[in-house]
Image 1 (cartoon, each protein chain N blue to C red):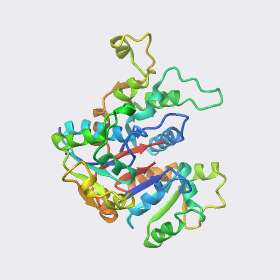
Image 2 (image 1 turned 90 degrees about the vertical axis):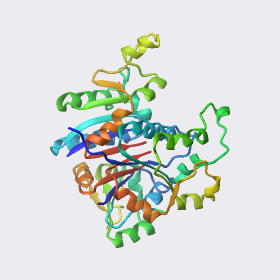
Image 3 (image 1 turned 180 degrees about the vertical axis):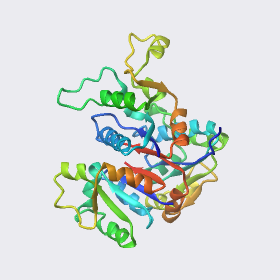
Image 4 (image 1 turned 135 degrees about the vertical axis):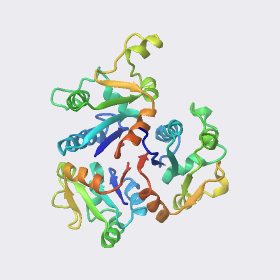
Length: 130
Length: 123
Length: 102
């Protein structure tokens, strides 16, 4: 089956990030496909290249980067939710003349259309809220 | 090769303004209207408060839901449901709602509505 | 066609589980996860509602890592099944849609 996940909650502030990641691992181990993970609402913080958890804490940014690379998963961050919360890629940073950009490698900024596309192209779309 | 259109139900359960989830749900369904899918929207629990008339949200620096929701028909989102028991629990009557043409449905109907969908987008 | 409901809030502090139970059908499944596993205690405010649904044939599950984290292994109702993430994946396939209550 083809799955997509929509995550709404910030990493660390609630358990949603970990639940979503654990579900992703399980579905991949069971031979299913993960088409897209869409980060909306506060979940956009997962895509920050500046996230610096403690050594003994899980690093969600890196965990998603790793499985996305191995399994060719699309990690998409909602542009509207990202910009207002201060998560920018190089292009948006230049457009808005900001001093820097902080979108982590492996994540892409795009519109809500990608969430709808995920709903259309997947057999199951599962939401993880905080 | 085109994919057949899907039945997608957006479920909005959170009150407006206190968290942005209610607005995020609306933004998502308005974005979805460009994709030729069979969309519907259900308000339940505190989500029904989004529909009250006479909202003026400028003093809290937000856009009023009472002003935004009437655009739904313009975006051809005409299947809008409101949970009867959520209204009754909050003692809100249908004539206090800003949208005409909503369908008031009970819990049993919601149960069945969920099973008719291809995808549920939960907010 | 049936729905898998996932609930992640404690019924002692949120009405989320109660809302879920109102619209749950007899062919549906319920997965309690994160703080939702507190809904699997016999002391839960929704215990009677849950019993009615269980008697009607609804299967209710609690996610093992969340049950264990919270020290609830010996306190979960006997009529609630403990499952893992593989089980969660299976349930999401068995039911036609997943409704997340949070």
